[in-house]
Image (cartoon, rainbow, N blue to C red; front, side, top):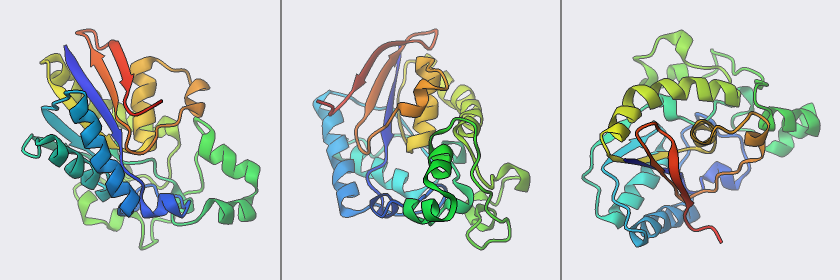
Amino acid sequence: MGQLILLRHGQSTWNLEEKFTGWTDIDLTEKGVEEAIAAGRLMASEGLAPDILHTSLLRRAIKTSDLALEELGRSWIPVYRHWRLNERHYGALQGHTREEMKERFSSEQVHQWRRSYDVVPPALDRNDPSHSRHDLRYSDLAPEIIPDAECLKDVRERMLPYFYDVMVPQLLAGKSLLVSAHGNSLRAMVMHLEDIDREEILTLEIPNGLPIVYDVDQNLKATRTHWLGRD
């Protein structure tokens, strides 16, 4: 039996400012650092001992896992990093606050972009200097793979190949995996693990810094689900 521990990164500076972050590489706030350390302590209190770490390519997820594993005394475990675990790409909304976008497009439109399953926000111009195609960490990807904007459906579809090709063999070998990622990439994973439908997933919130633990059987069914730190 394998174990999957999902951890959304601690609060980032753009979380605090209520900006759409997406693939923009934003650091943690002081509160975010504290949340990451607290996540490690929560896992330690439960006796969790991840064997392998999986993260996105974004520093807020990487730093969160580094801090949490240091608390666990397991900074030495093998690490896999992949763009398929990145946050949802918010396209042209990235770097703007919710209020700015509401004034520009309407509250209803922004709510639809944020909370629908398959409605994609406006694309980021590929010539924009902030576009990820100019980022060295994605230089080995075919240009057409790098998104200009994504909906949750897109995130799920690009996350699942990594889940099945890389993570599932490790789970079937009985390993405990820590996945340090983002609100939407983790929502997509929870949607798959718990077979949540496209309407129910829209109301699911994954809090910063609170681990979710899944014990999974050989059929990849969750035999136990435990959200740490929730009252």
